[in-house]
Length: 122
Image (cartoon, rainbow, N blue to C red):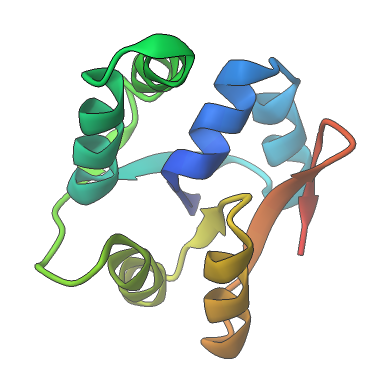
């Protein structure tokens, strides 16, 4: 079963504009095990505590990811931890962050993103 590591940007995007992301991900990569890194969860929790619309979106993203398999992070920047985890776990990364997508491309890590409200392999 393919592991898919979720970035906060992807989770917040689908929380803000609901899509068929789960079904689309299955279509793109087959059966998958969703992974939430501790540092990504911490990032979402920090955003959720700030107040406003973005905080509400972060809370919905946390709820969406509540049943994802947790994985630990090191002390590097979140994007670096995501790339490292993807390589270690041989996983695919779900993100809409263009900087992270560029880093994943350099590291030769597969990624999925959103385009036109649908999940696509990039």
